[in-house]
Length: 288
Image (cartoon, rainbow, N blue to C red; front, side):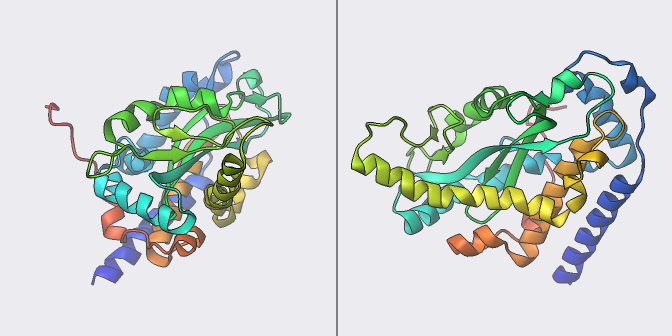
């Protein structure tokens, strides 16, 4: 019965996502905005999406490390850190963080908000955290012009880490990011400079081998949903492409719960069951 329930839930979610891809969710009001950031459009587009599908409202908390509950309990963080250590002999790292740009079609209005000067295309920016069992946690979008370090500061992840990223015995646990980030209280990055020691060079070499797992995980989302890679179909002001992408991440996690993924096999750690993953958000204790 449990497996049938799992498959039924995944089928419903997949159908809802497919419907969201097919329907043209146009909002004429958005076309009147000329100079804005993506954040300025967020409330308008989120309301439109929730009225149609409600998936973001019901399951969006699963993508945010700050609201995902027991998916990132201290016990799980410690287990993740142990699994990383068993493979690369580096202690106290439980996950990997990276930013990703999702290209979009050039919008007819407000295109400056999403243009990335470095890559020379229009895009939305997301921050992704990957764990050794291959689960993805995603935040965003932000303007495509933002760099990884700026997104890190805006995301609020640092505050959550300072409150929650500890082992059962109180040791600080860390995320590992690439050189696009700056060293932070619970964030480790590669050593920089031309005069680093041989030990530091070895550390960078080892961690680059394992940090690539977050890139695998990010790539798996668009591999499952090729439409996300079709830039001309990613119409920033005409469809809610941000929720398309975030729902794709949820569905990719759901599939991982059923079948595993490249990262989970690499680290030898199974993802949680589908029932464990799809846990509804617990209301705040002070909520009415």
